[in-house]
Length: 285
Image 1: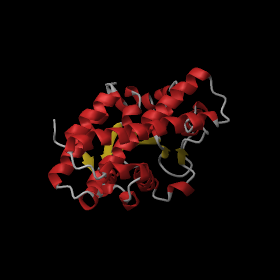
Image 2 (image 1 turned 90 degrees about the vertical axis):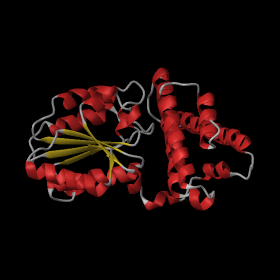
Image 3 (image 1 turned 90 degrees about the horizontal axis):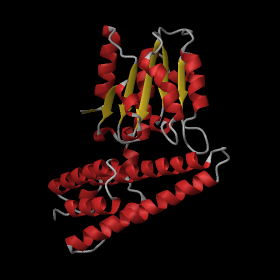
Image 4 (image 1 turned 180 degrees about the horizontal axis):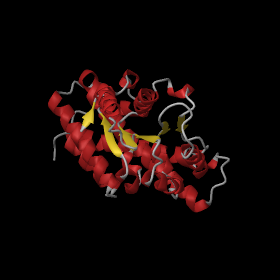
């Protein structure tokens, strides 16, 4: 069940007051920056100070040029967590964009599993992920999951990305409009894959060929999921004004896009899944 950010902060504060904190939390939602701000706010509640300036706060972000979290980063974090806190009762660690531990051979995620399974008594671990479907099931199962709702997406997401503009073209026929929209998605996804391949090619990281292919595929899947989430945001925030959609049409579109995400996660044939979703958006199936 999705919550507003303030509700999550209140629940967290109550857990702190009652001494009922879990060891590991997975914060999920649609917007990475909102999740990061929430995680920092929760860390601040625990540490009773700005986390970035606190010696008992530790953060891990994707830093390599191939934009994944490395085993070395995880090993460094684990070393810090097994030391006693300097000032606060707890050490607090935040792994931002945690799905990037699972890219390639998922070496970083596998390295972190033991810490999640047997966390030090004096630690709190927060993971953020806008793409929890990319996480290893063993990661998810060892965390308490808190979902951030759509209403807490930052106002900066009110302007749709450039690629979405052809989505609301002037085609009056619903069936033709559906197939044109399917093509818009496929064209965008081709660009996403090309960028992932170019990013890896230009990276200075020493990556084996098979790992590189896995990283490209993971990066592509992340980009594909993000594009569907962008469309959902557009239907929630922009389509009433831009495309004159009714509330029923918006709800139908968001539901169809959720079903598309699920179909792709189950490795359904992408072209058929996209066409079905676009027809569903138009109310034709």
